Amino acid sequence: MITAAYAGLLGLIFLILTVRVVMRRGAVRATLGTGGDVLLERRIRAHGNFIEFVPLVLILMILLEMQNVSIWIVHVVGVCLVIGRVIHGANISRENESLGGRVVGMVLTMTALGVASIFALLRSFGVM
Image 1 (tube, rainbow, N blue to C red):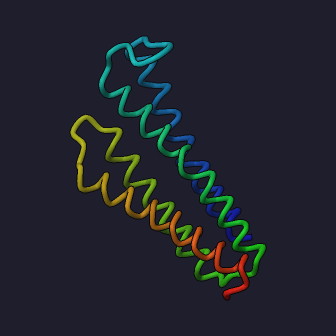
Image 2 (cartoon, one colour; image 1 turned 90 degrees about the horizontal axis):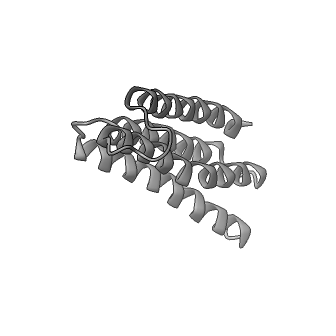
């Protein structure tokens, strides 16, 4: 299963994002919310944004695999998702954010979502 490899990579990325939030919470002693700390707020959003996109794309990827869509399509979706999430997470969770990096990360993530969605629809309607 190709999706399992991507899920594993994304799980590790999520773990890193989670640890970064936990460490910052400890540093600023904010057990709930952000305590007014901008860096903690950025890390929480990077973490949240990850979980808002990744599960749906992984579900679509597994469905594409189950529908015997070309493995290259599944890989394109997976690579876009992993690279997009790394770039986005790294950029949004820093004090000196690179807006360009954040945009590139989101474009790659949305590309993964769009490609997976379109191929799932095409396959389910028997177009391909």
